[in-house]
Length: 110
Image (cartoon, rainbow, N blue to C red):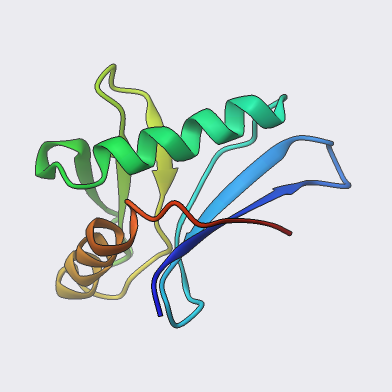
């Protein structure tokens, strides 16, 4: 099964969020909040455009041994963030999953 995006509006703050999911339904990237649905949709388009480029990924590590990454647009703005991983190798697998699924055009309203 191919990856897909879920787009939803938060009941708590009324902002729009999207997540990128792998074919196994695991979330592999989550967005920041957007005030408008159209802005969240533009964020999805940016992931679709930027997810294949290695230079758009910034790998992070905390002093507590957590690893994660952010995906950035060409202007340097963060488009999405991964979950926390327990190793750099697991983080790299997450990046590969975003590369494999990021170009998906399937968007589901949650």
